[in-house]
Image (cartoon, rainbow, N blue to C red; front, top):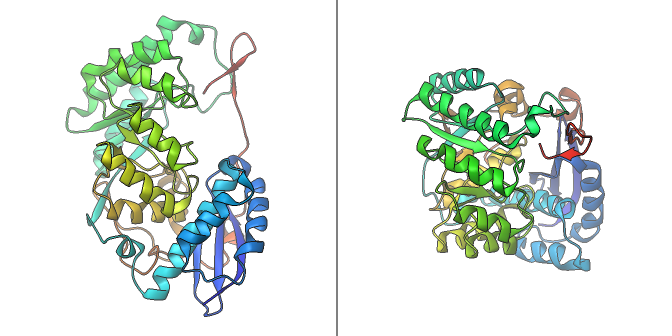
Length: 380
């Protein structure tokens, strides 16, 4: 079997990849650098010149060739590599008529605990969102501890340290009082705090027992993140922007995080994500895969979650629930009281619908940053 073509499938906010073979079997993948999908497509065209005519089953070899050629790195290139890698695993699973997890050691679980987001910033509305999710069967929610997604400006009052910290603490307090203790709160700071703000906030919400605090500061400095983690008693989760197993290892070895959040569609696909899970396991660090993307990303995450022992919880994107994206698939994911059932079909276990790009017209997300009261750029 050889690779005969690689096609791009733009649909809605996503960019999917289809790797075709001379046996009529194909695999699908997805790119994760959602703000720069045009650049990802260009990177894929470069990789395509190498991949055409190759044996698709040599996945580790192809990963190394793509990753180590021409010495450039970064999220755009790694997103293209990730999409190809996921597609190759899907293709191999279909060829052998087994799920991907079977090729990686078999199942460690039958279903995957998930959490869904609450995109509100007012405490009472956030609490109502948590209660709605609880009624739907979820026992965990993602709470936004950052600027509103509905505005690109920051008020004068929001720049006041005490106001910002106490406001965010109040959000958590109200949500905990609404849902009780039989429900986990995942605090998404979204890299929007300074180290001082993050430490004060985390200490203020410790008594509300959140599952984790995600990206309390920008993760560009592992040392700075480790310093914050060492001064608080809430587990830190990070890793969605990492583009190598080495970055992830640094978070573990420098005790910057208790949970890693690899994005399978950015970090290097299933090949890299499985290695990251093993590195984390050696450090007693859990895995909570990042997943703000489409159904192929979710399917790839599920294959990873199925075969690792240190899985914690899976992000289930709101687009699937509220955006009608279950209709992107020939058969939707099966859910059960906040859990996703791991597909048992060959490869990823899912298929995208025919003519996807015409049913879900391509519409890329734009880049944006918040502007502070003084006119400077403000982390959302």
